[in-house]
Length: 221
Ligand SMILES: C[S@@+](CC[C@H](N)C(=O)[O-])C[C@H]1O[C@@H](n2cnc3c(N)ncnc32)[C@H](O)[C@@H]1O
Image (cartoon, rainbow, N blue to C red; front, side, top):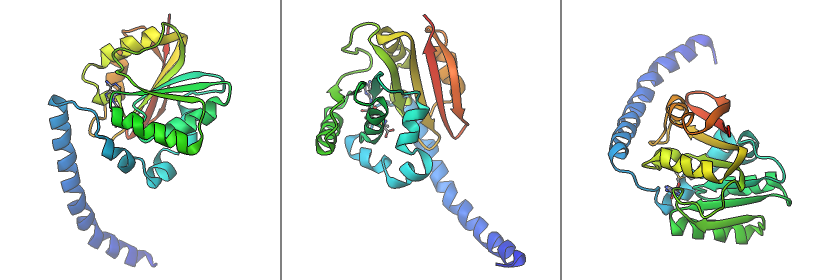
């Protein structure tokens, strides 16, 4: 396409794109405002909606995310809020047969969905159970790594959750958050750093940027 034609097409399409984006931005802002005052777990029917092929292909490829979260073979990993279990299954492959994933969710229907998927795919190194992140049913210092994808913003008292995760992590254990701006509960990286570095964690690594980031915290003591 000649350059002049590209400029004309650009001029014609720009207002259309802006017109489409404005309602999306307004809706997103409204949902963010509502969510600030009204916290509730994501409904189970939304799990397959947010777990789609575009996300897997272009945004968060499951195998890459498991590596990005710092998961390595043999680890005992805790996942809070597994959703549709796609990332749980990728993590189970990353820990391998000598490792184990424990996936917890406060919503029984979500765990039912996860268990059905694990059974259907014959995954044996994942335990899925209903539990609240505020009261984890695990002994002190028993977990190597905990990860949460698009979950921490949904939790009304994130400090309480992180104190409980601190209890179950082994010394030097890792706590990883992945967040993406389109999530109405998206927290800023600086907010998580400010809140959690006073709770016995230090920042080990930050991957990505404003739109999509992963922060890996390490338990310092
Ligand atoms: C937005 S979904 C994230 C799904 C998945 N991680 C993903 O990225 O596709 C958040 C999940 O966190 C769970 N959740 C919210 N509050 C929780 C709590 N206090 N304890 C455990 N799970 C919780 C919700 O039930 C929901 O399944």
